[in-house]
Length: 488
Image (cartoon, rainbow, N blue to C red):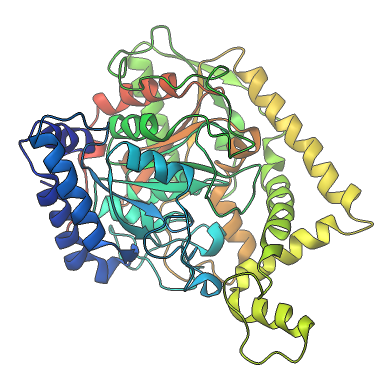
């Protein structure tokens, strides 16, 4: 059963050929067998999931209509509020927090008749590029358990790569869906900012965060996006469907883009530390597109070199503001024996937050402080606008841009934990897409000399996910990279 794609399994469940209960039990069997070595799941909801699966099977047997995800077992990143189990953000601060409601994306999954089997590990509050910053457990890369799965949605990517479920949801603030998808050899889609509701997503960087799917194939990503996309009036950044309608992302998926123009920026291949194997695989992918009739066009993104510095000012400033709510009073961890009300606040945060979270709060607070706001934060906002303009100018000439997803393959655990700046550079190719709010996808495009996955990133203009998926599917349909999974 685990050889099936999400679309194939969904169809077989909807047609009554496979029971959702059997598929769900198979997922839990895989988790029991594999999760001890991988650590992708923080929690599972077996009783609740099997009950939901039984209800869907009954609807199908009665001939009742079912949703687009019809009994499909999936998992979500543990920063999405759900009224079953806990919502921890992989933090000791929220280790015992039970959300009283479902977030917008979770509601959409339930409406689509998905079966949510559990929640996946992550970097604490989504702050990291390796999932080593989780305050609760480590997650290993299924291709090599001595290596990281990427981050911050490392658990979500590892769960799909290890075939513990057929699809997951992650969140992407600066590459946190695409980079772990690249490291784990799966597909990761970051939709346009405002395409998917952020209601119930525990905020890190509010102007950057976006929920998206991690899947085996491009078609599975389109299936998942169709289920979770749409307007939500509880999210002030959600875009009305009158301005950007939700499309059937599978309708023309197999129809290649004619006269495709692919933008290639020299800046993408001048990055310090770009692995030769990564550059080779990406260039081979570009050559394959050329063989399919696409035209490669040189474009310039002159301000993209400032994207990492810009991101770590904007994101940390927003993190400083968003995490101020964790005060030891309202919810979450509270220090055991505070001396006074100031100690309640300071000790609760000291005990509950990990080192990376503290680092980013301090960076953001400094950037927003009196005397430094104009010099750092305001200047970063201006550069962010220039980066967005660079993309817009490039898209006047081309249909999409292509680059490596990450400058290297999955690195070994501990290699970068003592060097935060080196860790931050792991997202050098993905960060600018979040700053611009545009959609991007990572698809597997090869293996390096150590048999580790390499990802190709494709970027398109706002709300063109239908075209983005078609472009990605052109490559997938001519290759077998998406069929390769680590040995178990």
